[in-house]
Image 1 (cartoon, rainbow, N blue to C red):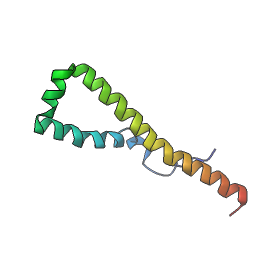
Image 2: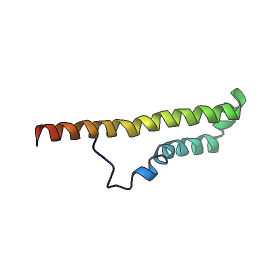
Image 3: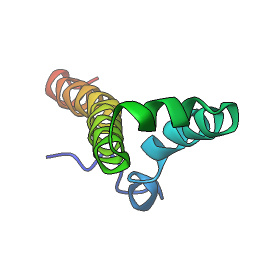
Image 4: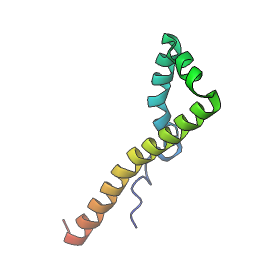
Length: 82
């Protein structure tokens, strides 16, 4: 198996990067007051759990897809000897 990210400093920050997209959304919801409307419809704990799960799934997908592409490309590259 090829270590795609072996020489980079990406791995320690891989868990932080998906959260950056949600930070801006949360700040916008909070400053506009939209979060009050969300809290009136559902409990804050349920909202937080929903957001954590969705950010984890979308972030995991966004990190896994390029890794899988790089891994498959690397194997084909070695196999054909280019």
